[in-house]
Image (cartoon, rainbow, N blue to C red; front, side, top):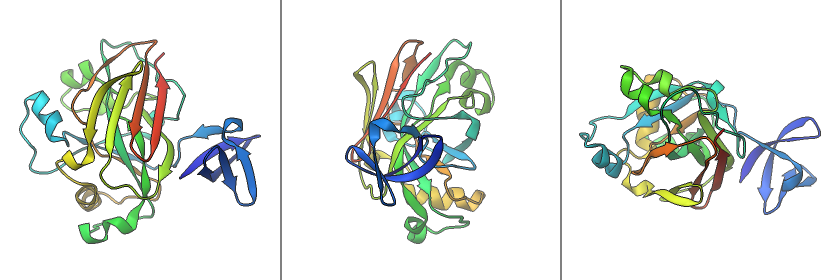
Length: 235
């Protein structure tokens, strides 16, 4: 796995091997470094309504093509750093598998989509649900600062995996990527047909059933098989 770190004022990308981070010939204990968002995207592309069970719980029709939206990079937050609850009535967690793009691409076919995947990580598509229901489009509800926790590390080879979300230690979401309506390669084809994807860009692939409210003082964890756990307190 790979990640981005800050150590003694220096930011670097390193390989995670157990409890150490390797940067060239230098090894540093994972407890000694600050874990940053593992990539530097130019944009975060979200996918709505992409699990069959999530569409069912909302009573919504299965979409004919991916529903996409954007989150600004100012919404990014790293592992263990807080999600800031704004002055709204309801803020929801949405645990998701995130895809990180490896290089600039446009109009990519499903056949070659794998060539443009750097790897996979955990994400929380935090949403101000009351604003989402109030507004015609989703920009405001998805875009508050800290509303896009991503990390902690990037795993380079992931297939079908379990996606869990825990609230204060209790499992509140449990799904598997095999239940996605549109698979990762389909999403890359569709999104790159709309916009150029740049190195480091993040695609949030959608959330399984069980989305719900989180409050100030809660701790939310997104745990994905073979990748790890993204943990953020809510303040």
